[in-house]
Length: 272
Image 1 (spheres, rainbow, N blue to C red):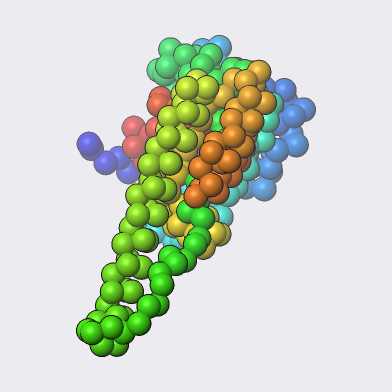
Image 2: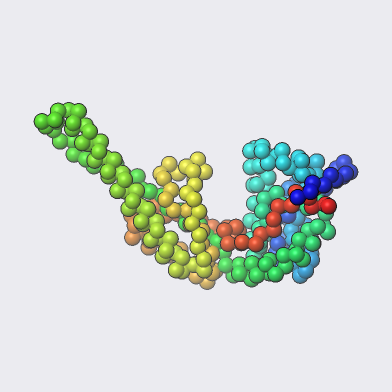
């Protein structure tokens, strides 16, 4: 791809795309804080509405953006700000979340992206209407293996220790295998009630905030009308599989079930 050098005035602002909705109330948007600390706004085209923030190009332009994406502190800050907007939109209706750092140089480019992807965006919004994404996390219930100490026997103290250690390791492996099978069963049962389900990689303990190992990190697209039954099913499955501690979270913006999300648009490439 050919790189384009863009001569932009100092202080120029692009448009950080948060997501696409069917319609947006200006009064509501005025209450949602965007990336620059000001309210988000709407860009309408092709019968759709893109919700954007002003994005100063000295921070969000192509080169600054490339540098900033390597800064974990900066990345966490903007990711939280972006998600807060998407979450606020999702509370009011279906939204197709944009990928993080989708930045256009002007509203015309935003409108063009809506027109180019209209069919996919409309289909995604239709699929999400009346539904929400819910997460179910399954953690291995801690429990020490109960191995009888026994006596040293003919093999002596060292041999007895090795036997106990082998039994402990075997019990741990068996618990993990049972937990993995239980997680599979839980996911399958939840998928039968949900419109769709996906399993993500287990979260690191530093992210989950739970010391026990995570064996299930599932996301489920659930009809609003089916939510009470879905919640009840999570409780039933937790009792059926006591080796797992299940946590139901949500609703979340439907990140897991939007295949055709607006792609990142680094500003220099977006201007040529």
